[in-house]
Length: 411
Image (cartoon, rainbow, N blue to C red):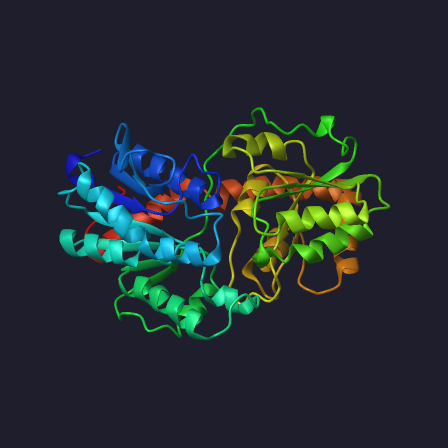
């Protein structure tokens, strides 16, 4: 690549590989792709596992600066909110003490959630006089209001100020669904802020070994419906458990839940109390093992609380598509993902409140082996055509260049 077209970019987020969250994997793949394009990429992320104030790891033109912070995840809600509020100041302190102290950036990219990185982005933007791109995967606090987790009181207003602040300092905001564009029609944005749909992405991943072996589990011999990812309030997993309970008599169908989240223990308790032998839970696994896990399964499960009014395409959906798994999804009404599943014919979806109807959809997709095979083929094609990391990287770089009025820096 021509040296004149090489740009120095900093990416900030609250999670990065080797963490196993979908956001961590997305950022790792994006940073690696941009680095492979010849750009100088610096990732700045918090870490509670290092002993020094910061730790820098370099891999060619990709550099990862981990900054020591107190543990944020898996703590009480008040402590988590306080530490996330302080997160940008921890990251700036780490950068000041590292070799990045006096670096001038050509572009800044950051990932939300969290909504609290705004002060760090604003500081870096002022010092470098450069453009910024917000990868927005979660419209918070709105989704928390939608599912009844939060009311529109003082706490909501507190979060809302940080939400709006990060929108105001972004030159480009990449949302993950066309329906999210409507949300921004009502937001007090700068007149020159660009809002665009930035699809989620997933780098190619070969099928390898996996620590989970279905052959050695009680689900051996069953057609498997797999759920891989977060199990929290936003997913309304209680509804899914009702459907699984209705399918208990079906000895040919099994459910594999792999991941973590606030509702995991409650779900395990429900399974124990009801004596469900058609479901098995595992803790989250390394992202590199996901293809090996999905290779053992037949259908991917997507779950979103129907009270959501905003829209998204979960990372697990992309993983299912890449693995050639048709999906069965319970979604909020009129979700863009529902239209996508229907139009591309890669699975079945439902947005109602009746677990029995949903359980019959699961039976239908398991029963129709030929139809499932066609869905699987279309799913794999969809993954390659629409959700590649190279497409996402090119779009982000191109949008930043358009803001600068220059030729595309990804060329």
